[in-house]
Amino acid sequence: MDNLTIILKVEERLNKLSSNDYDNILKWQIVEAFNKGVIDWCRRQLHGTNLKQTGDEQSKRRIDDLQVLLRDHPLDMEKKDGYYGSTNWPENYLEYKRVSIVGKTECCEAKKGWVLTLVEEANIDVILNDTLKKPNFNWRHTIVTLMNNVVKVWTNDEFEVPKATLTYYKQPRRIEIQGVSNPYTGIISTADVISEFKDDIVEIYIDECVKILSGDIESMSSEQIADKSVESNN
Image (cartoon, rainbow, N blue to C red; front, side, top):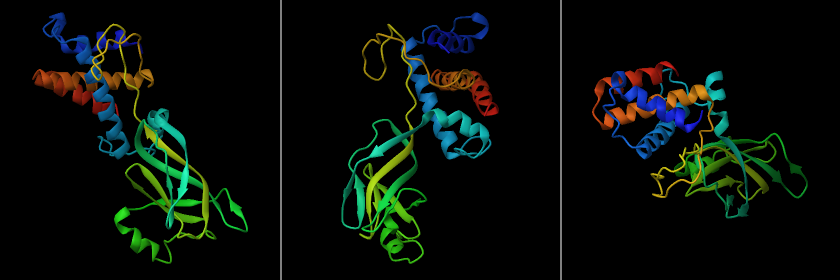
């Protein structure tokens, strides 16, 4: 959906019977509210805090709606004491999905079949001393922690990790309108940047945008209508 259509739909839902009551809302404010609505909606779907209480990949719809945000990022790994730590991080990172690795010892290399479990950094000492949970090359199992944008693949110094890949949800693309000030940089946008989502999801984002703007201008009826529309279409 092009950005001018988004602006038109937002303004139509804010104005009562074409009264133009809210024509003082500037286009950059609509852009900011739309982009904020996208982030709010994505986080609700990923964490399952929506009306149906389903998180990412817990239903066919969630898989279909969010797959556009999934990315693979090759990690550069550096050996540390008891683990391999990544030295690079994706700039557009939003949320962790999984890590896949290649494990290696002096006798062999294991490229497939690994099961990696994301665990809490606070419990790492306990887990490393647990026979059933600690890293094990023979069983192709190990644990992962995240700290300060570093992926730690724990090995107990029993094997090497020459290759690792982070699968994650990226930040949604922010829309921009040519000739309109970018609310994040203050610079006039020189070209249109459209949403990467399909049109039926953009319709939900329009309602999210209207909900945010209605709250800002204290139009409670418009806010309630938009909120109901957002949740009923999830």
